[in-house]
Image 1: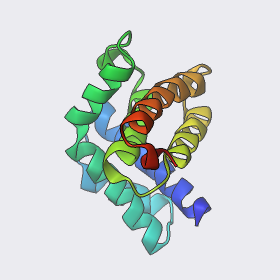
Image 2: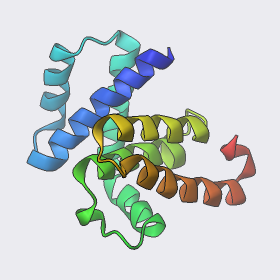
Image 3: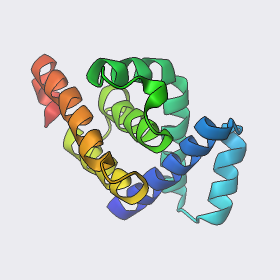
Amino acid sequence: MTGGRRRARTVAIQALYEIDSVGHDPDATLQHLFNEIKLNEESTAFATDLVKGVIRFKEKLDTQIHRFAPAWPVSQIGVIDRNILRLAIYEILIDNKVPVKVAINEAVELAKNYGEDNSPKFINGVLGAVSATITKENPEQGE
């Protein structure tokens, strides 16, 4: 199942990148990607839920990115890194369906595969700060 979820996150990041960079319709973008990348029904639903959740909560997610990476205006963070952060913060703070450590590890892996050389370290640092805050506020969520 981890492999399917990782592939679903990869599709979600590809969709979010396209939506963010060129403004394509989310449903059409997802459909196009699902035609290219075959996922099982569960992974397709997971990727769709992630994309729709990130889009729905984009403003709140960007506020959190600004909170935890104040030296970097959200608009100046690379498109891939920005969307990896949005996805991971969505999973950590809103979706709450995977352990925080899993969300962070998956985000770092996406950064290694799709980001710049310093992306994994940047993503890990920002998400570490998010994790530290929620662990203090809600200790059982950090598990």
